[in-house]
Image 1 (cartoon, rainbow, N blue to C red):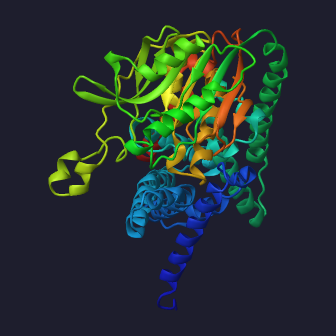
Image 2: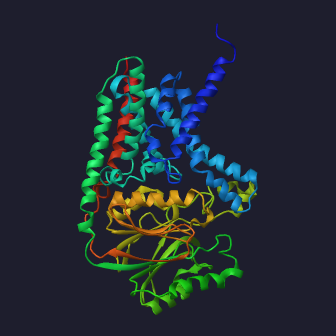
Length: 509
């Protein structure tokens, strides 16, 4: 006879196990960056899904795992709230709410995967397809931070990342999920003494093929990177985020930039890059930016500067390209705004929830904006966490950008995991599109990343300074990448595979 409470205890143990699986997987992201952990940390979750009573329990297990993953990876949300002087309760609520919202797609993965899973050798591949399809759809059509693309867990292994230039941002995540599912299936077969080698061999061949392609691509890097270079200067002023718009500190901020720009240099810079919203005042785009224009004329070089701008009736988080003559040559307005930071969803609730009226009110820029013509070549701009959205950089690369400038201000997060996670996604954008990424952060991490994802110059987090770097004058990938030209075909393929699995459920006798 079953003892009372045993079922509840088993359910609690299962949910705790799923939570632990998600938390362990998050440790593979930048800081602490235990990348190898991701290859087996989800294996117990697939075992729990196999033993679940149905799709409802599988959804709860997925939700628990997703909360564990995002709760661990995004702990810095709580820290950021505390840095801003908010109460502990507000910090915990913000952290938990975001982690729960981000975990919903993991719950959906559990429900769909368990409901539509086939039997036999196709099972792990079906799970990987469902996981990738849901992640692909959420990345494109829901507001999120996009750190749950499991390919990000392999950020240390540059040779493995090269395959992203062919298959896009979701392929490596598919391989990681499939490896975990195959591992769970192999363990289950081992326990039943019915080992089938086809799936373990297939996943090993997939990993080996990806590595082989990566090694071949990296082998041609040295020859492609030889030749003449252009100079770019990246300013990292380390301005305290919580003093930036205080009028008492405006002069100090200007002097900070003046000291960096006045330092000796080996030669004239072709372009100087300033970080996101680096100026202490709002900018009226039509009136120019006098203090930056003065430096452009003095240095006789282009300036790319981030600022909060006012244009007619709308306010934007913007980047401006200033010519050596001091004129605004081009402007970019941030497309993907931060919810509750730069814009407020459900603004109509402001009459009932007073704090909503006090939060960000910026307007997004147009989906397609003109590219910048710089001395370094045709370039696109992205601001802050826009780098986490693969489709934005891919769209710009497909239109001809050979460089992507990521202007950011991670001063909000101080020395937490947040700045390292934000920096890491830029390596993926460089490889996926075969573009050079120039990243300029107020507090760091500022860097130049070449089209193979190799960091060629860098200023550490919190290190004030000016990074004098070089960018090859020739373009090693004039046609960009297969992914840049053809889009996220692999994510779409997984979406179709998931649809086929769902249809197959209805056709079962």
